[in-house]
Image (cartoon, rainbow, N blue to C red):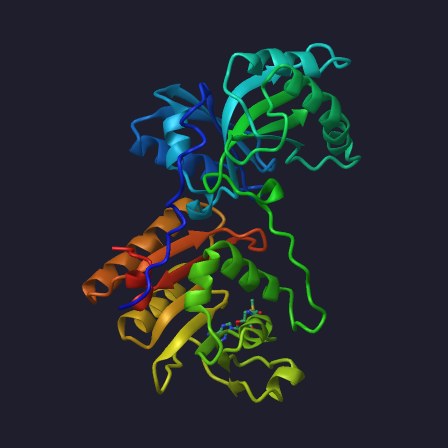
Length: 383
Ligand SMILES: C[S@@+](CC[C@H](N)C(=O)[O-])C[C@H]1O[C@@H](n2cnc3c(N)ncnc32)[C@H](O)[C@@H]1O
């Protein structure tokens, strides 16, 4: 019998169960320029809970403030798992939208607003905005000690750090505008600003290696990753040159076939774990079933998606990881149309699957899709 792993969504008693937290909306961070898609994603999740609201966005800020106008935003937040959001890389439950009148005293208004609510186990003061002088970052740093002391004195913040209580995030949108928000994990990301800080290794043939590393780190739990990515597996990389993705997979012990008309980094060509094939990635098919197909070809998203569906439906691979390059407009529509078509093809071929989609920090005008079939579904009880 296959071993059952806990899923990422099974958790202990919720830290929200004991508190009297009253929410006004959701606050999310995304890639700058994708605020509209992120806002639509939040509203889509809220609508499923019959909760409605509207978003305030400033294009290019990378911040979305979704204000709830009907229903309870906390109910929506409880349903969110940020690793399952496509465009939001961080989501908090917004509690107070504070305009600071006296720049000499930012502490008192925050303490007063939070005094009547539930308690928190830790304080983070941050800004998602990049101002050239870094003045908001400096402000966030400067505020941390006096704010923590005042919140502790008021009983809002626990004396010692506690994981049993929600975390408090004070998000500085300007020197006069602070949003107080609540976070629990895995609803919110535990990474600062929701961004994984990965170190680029000089021997990697391209910076794209960071993209695939981030995909494996953030789109799978550690137990899931251990299950799907193992030494001795075989994989195919379509559109492989110069070889960042192939290099990463080989570093994980996977034997790779790299397909591209372009040339691969010399060290990879000489690596016994790599077979180079000069071919069209949309035509190439494997002689034997592989564990992984990965694809980073820049082409129409529907074309890539259809080819990936071929690989999964004709049972040429167990797992697929690929990028869908997004058009300038109707990006959400394009993603939804591609995913719907993938589901139709998989259902039509009677293949059970788990499909995850995320715009990673290292992605640009694209999203990354992970499709998992086979024993993964039984091992992780996904039906
Ligand atoms: C973004 S780069 C891939 C970078 C690669 N993932 C890495 O980590 O180094 C896209 C690659 O797709 C290749 N490509 C484009 N169309 C292709 C096709 N139809 N078949 C195979 N490769 C293709 C290009 O030659 C290019 O090397």
